[in-house]
Length: 267
Image 1 (cartoon, rainbow, N blue to C red):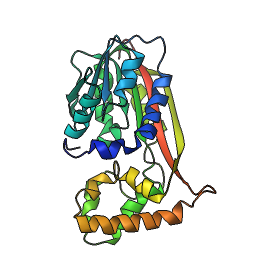
Image 2 (tube, one colour):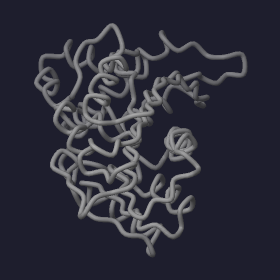
Image 3 (cartoon, rainbow, N blue to C red):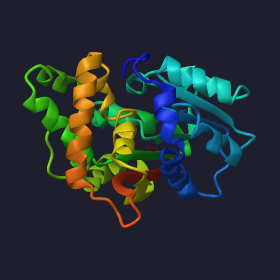
Image 4 (tube, helix red, strand yellow):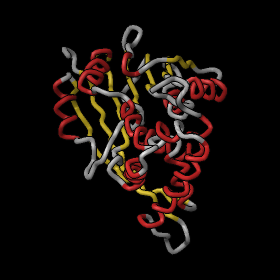
């Protein structure tokens, strides 16, 4: 993902719900772990990095992100912490790590079959790799974007900028990742999926959420007029798939996948 692609203010609009999966992932990391060096890959505005520093204040915690905007916000919010610019697809630690934490970042990286084994190789013995990724690309919020782009000839070329196409089932299969992780030297795996039901004030809020993440590669390449047309059509479509609750709010389901394991001595 290009370093100037993201906008920290747009992403941070829903920082609480975006941080909750990071908290849930961190909660499963062994309380016996005493890491000296931690990397937070795809740290964004630092909301996950501060969780790691609060848990292990004596550790060297380094946030890594490719985005200038995200790093600027992170450094502003947490001036005493270390943040560096880097691409996860090519990332290597400086001398190993005791914990590599990748919260909602690896979905932007291609070729997990190469990237994940390399991250595991960079762990120190008994180091932990902890990953959380959205697994909702088959769900209406994302598929509505796909269909709107497909149905408009002038927008159709933007499909190539989206990582995922038409799906009718979850993109990520935990059984496949189990084979990849164990085959790369991880033990004591903990794998699970959670579907969060986030209460949104209206359908506009689901659009605002999506434009900060999965929709962003296409939306930012549209002109202002097309953005307005797309936004109106997107929200109208959402009203058909996400009915209002009795209190007038909208429940927005969002599935996430979690993976955590410990590197063996001889891996």
